[in-house]
Image 1 (tube, one colour):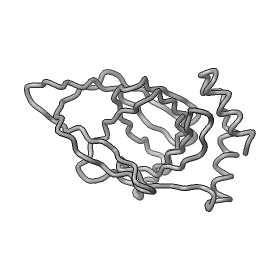
Image 2: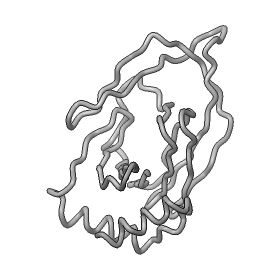
Image 3: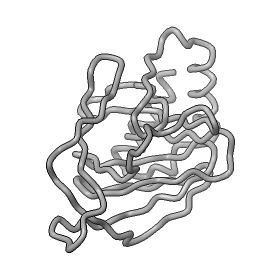
Length: 172
């Protein structure tokens, strides 16, 4: 398992996320499958399971798992969100589309409320804020297995799943 995390760490240092191979991805998924008691998983409000894989220095490595017709977002929850730091994602299996969006804080018509995600033990909860906004999509990227994408700090985005029964990216 250390070889897999070493490969992930090397990818994060060089920012060459495609260097993480399909073979290493399979090894990682096999380790999780064979030792489920070793991993903590929580259901995220945006409809996926989050498995905390490792802390490597200041970087956290997570596995997100969407299972068609099993994991679903909370009712009436927008998928648009942001991350406080830079995010890099490598898609192990499945397919998805990543949408970058621009937030308008002073629109003539509000379409969404900003929520915060609060981490409470093994649960992530949504907490509404007072901020009302609208947004527009600025770009979209289609992703298949073994492809990666990144999101700059504090930028907003959302993802939609493809037709696969299981979609699982690693996030760093």
